[in-house]
Image (tube, rainbow, N blue to C red; front, side):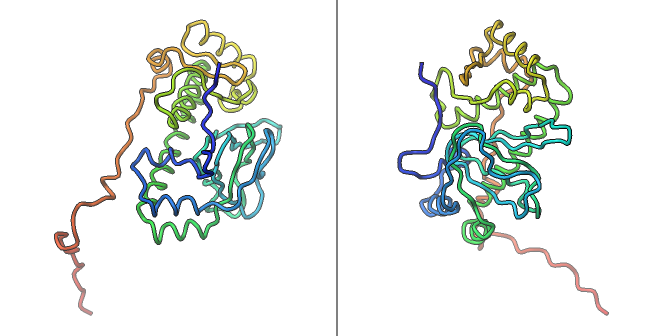
Length: 268
């Protein structure tokens, strides 16, 4: 059985499936996106990119593999707040801070490349449409985190595991929407527990129940959704449509655009 695993293309260009779902990139935008990242760094499973509290935190572009962002507490407990897949920008929440708010660790062999603050500045100045897409992607990330927070805090354990399965399966499938069958998902039961706030024993029971219901199966890094409709019903989240960029690509020309209203001048 062959597992589907999106990875870095043979031409070494960074994967763009995460952003091109909002619209195709022009040749200039594709080149600018490719040039954002610096020299790639190869990681092995378990290797840390940085730790929470590190100074001058950087953003990284994930070319291949899986990495996690997590917060570890004084008692040793860990909460995985985000699982990143190829095409993601990793560490963006710490972009506005002087110290890292999360720990970044490889969940599989992976390749990341640092993205400098200056690269973001050039992008906003010279490629505003691409910058707008990245802004939308950041809001998508925020919505996913809101959903994960709600599910971890207010749902049954099997719903939490089901939501994680549905989210990861959809994101992996983004690289090849026509793919059917199992996908590569390199999380241990402990890591699934850290992402859902559950113990290993509870995670194991949930996975067994999903398998027995013939909804989904996840074992030995192989994840397969057998019945998408029943999984959506169990979790309570339907597949969502994305918003287009019509709000940014204004069809009005400068000549047809009405003049901006001026504020009345107050006489001294």
